[in-house]
Image (cartoon, rainbow, N blue to C red; front, side, top):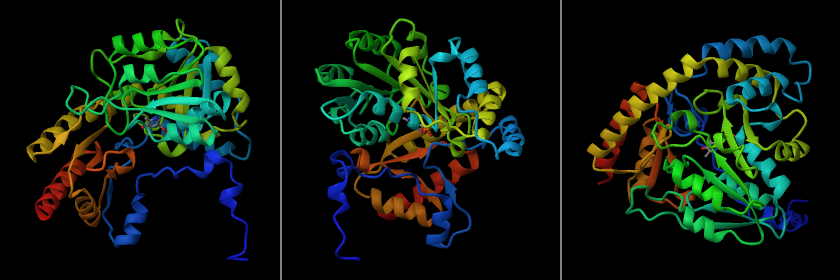
Length: 378
Ligand SMILES: *Cc1c(COP(=O)(O)O)cnc(C)c1O
């Protein structure tokens, strides 16, 4: 039985055979188990360090009473709330089990064998996964050189040049994870205008709330002018609801209709829907979360630079910085000290680590541990 079964890998569809599983940040519980540590901090998955907002939490608790019922498969209340929030009709909205789910819906609806998706090197890891899982080919374009204002950022000219007759989808992360780099309104708008109308442009705005550059664009404003545009947002980052899994896509109603055809009927659960509605209204909590991030991101950047490290520009709630050859040793040392950050070698950034902006005490502890481990590795 063990050694004579068929090769299931050969049975799998070709796109799945070549896939590497997504590597999530190490859960705190795993580090506690593996290293026998009590006091662990996780700065590895760009979650809101303040936790969920009080209003979202209360709504989630209240919603628990009805979890014996299936969720509202159409997500009526949440879509109404989002429609009001964005000032667009509710039929432009597709709910997802996290915004990753929406990315997968786009792939399921528009990609497949003999089709291609274009995205940048160092872009979010879910783009290659959903592309290849759908049987489509990935055209990965080289990023902007590191000796530029936006090192390792998306090169929109290269992305445009990579669009061919088989291209159906272009994925743009703004800002991008793991680099933190972003695209300004003028350049992104010009790019979308230049993309053929029969190619879907997905602008992934998972970190929208955090982006504070005056030229950072809200791509959802361009939906009326560009029917081939899909903008994705999430409740996982600034809204502090990563564990509930809720995100959404904004698009032309015809695209939303197609995405909703491939969507699992109950992909967003009852508790997540209720918490998301409450969180959307809790603007004070989002403001507070964003303010804390800006203050602490500036502090972290200054501390990392004071350690002599190169830090990439970031419009998100994380910083990507270069450790160099000692990266594995330094990361291992941080883990032993109970600090979880994210190595990004799988993003073709082998000497880099990504750290999520945490609470002040967490950031101080991280900098202390990093400083010690850098000295030890030197
Ligand atoms: C975190 C992240 C997401 C959001 O994932 P969810 O499925 O909504 O939790 C999407 N895109 C990028 C670039 C991200 O970093």
